[in-house]
Amino acid sequence: MISKFAICPLNYVCPELIKLFRDQAAIKNILGNKRLSVLDIGCRNPQSLYILYNDLGFDILEGIELTSQEDAVNEFLRAINLNYDKTSTTIYDLYLKYLLFDGTELTGRTTHLNQPEFAKKFNVRFNTEAHQYFQEFEGERKFHLIILSDVLHLMPYVAATNLLRYVTKSLSDKGLLYVKVNHNDNPVAQEKGHYSYMEKQFLALFDAHYEPIHFCKNLVEDSDLVRSIVYLGWKTKKS
Ligand SMILES: C[S@@+](CC[C@H](N)C(=O)[O-])C[C@H]1O[C@@H](n2cnc3c(N)ncnc32)[C@H](O)[C@@H]1O
Image (cartoon, rainbow, N blue to C red):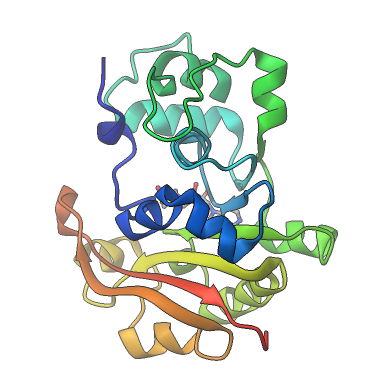
């Protein structure tokens, strides 16, 4: 069996976030004793949502992804060198074959969900653009956590700022924002033509509305020495 962390590296759902939510009593004290909700923007596949459900006690899990489900499944299989698996075509197939592990430290959620239960629990909207999603649902939904991992550097700064404005509106009081982007000093980003951020410019995005919990300006991922910036913060009262 493949190790869970081989599939979902910790830098996606960062250790600081995990530490925070492992103390369920403390986090519920801050966020209110409600069912925890999360939105993962540009999630690609359900791996992060699955960990947030299974290990960290989230109950309402939504994802937005620009690509089709088929592309997302193929990308997942490619990333773990299993592209010879032609029988997995949906994210439910990935869940059954690669994401379902017995024994969780925190939630004890080991039950296998059937397909309708899975679809209800993991609400991933494929073929959906993030700005359009917010235009449609603006103000209707609030989340305790919003994740933007390796997504903002795919759009120009103005689009990123606009998206963050929507995100801030869609976070609950004291809701958490987790963002990871390419650092300016990142050869892979330059090669791929991604937008990239200097620390100051990046931090300025959060200044007015967030209080930082964790900031890492030079996260180096093992694979191909990609440099990233990571930010985890609380939404402040005045937002
Ligand atoms: C580099 S991947 C990151 C995937 C995952 N979040 C992670 O950190 O491993 C970026 C994902 O964001 C999606 N994406 C890019 N722009 C988007 C947009 N405007 N709205 C929704 N998804 C978007 C892409 O299709 C892609 O799957």
